[in-house]
Amino acid sequence: MILCVTPNPAVDRTALVARLTFDAVLRPTEVLVLPGGKGNNVARAAHRLGALVTTTGFAGGHAGRWLVEALDAEGLNPRFVPVGGETRTTYVTVDAAGRSTLVYEPGAPVTDDDQAALRALLATNLLPAATWTAVCGSPPDGMAAAGYAALVEASHAAGRPCLVDVGGPPLAAVIAERPDVVKVSRDEAASVVEARAVDAVSAARALVARGAVIAVVTDGPRGAAASDGRSSWAVEVPRVRAVDAIGSGDAFTAGLLVTLGSGRPIDEALAVAAAAGTANAEMLGAGRFDSARQAELVEHVRVRRHAH
Image (cartoon, rainbow, N blue to C red; front, side, top):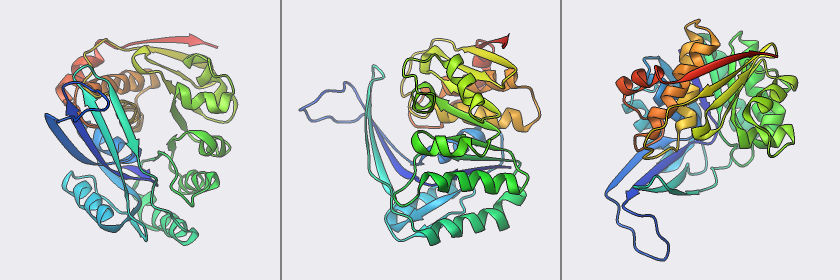
């Protein structure tokens, strides 16, 4: 079972319009509402890849209750800690050319007691049943970077490997806990490696040097790179017509978790992950893709290994 932790979930509202313009009324041809946040997107994609998943984090208010109910309806086994604020909503508008605009509300604030309740839930109920833990996404108000490091520490204390997909100060904090996998975008990696123009391979190597056991850095349609300190891998992805690339990184994360969790090697995991991320871009909504299409795309991903 893959345990996906989303401290800052959201109700995601995505609208598809013919053409994205400003200072105009846009009438969508399709509207999709999903329980979102990075970890929930990862869980959705992992579930499509055949994995059993559990989702957790903080949820509050009417929106939080809807989010939990919607996750349950998808079979994503929600076990959320209730909080006093209202779970945020994110607004995404995409057009037929694949362009998008995003508006993200701030998350509901969490208290020290809320965070202690989540750690207790993890330790006593959720981590014992997990094979992997994924801690993903931005922090809500009230949760410091050290709060993320505590989640990685809890996973390791339970003897469970942990993947993290976070940026900014939380990324710097969690690396000190030596997460088993750090999976971030090239822009997120740059905030830690202090080189804005760094390529994905160099960024992955730098993250390992700072504490990650394995680092994976995604770079949109340019592919991805990975390093474990001994070898590095460059990933080339096939070109497709993108409908909505939002959530492709989360689908990539799901592919890593499902494949590594089944004991298969990292080069195979990177191919499965890249195919899931690419298939996600072909469909509206984060963490959604056609499973048959994902399996087809695996054959068109190229993974090249290099010794350090």
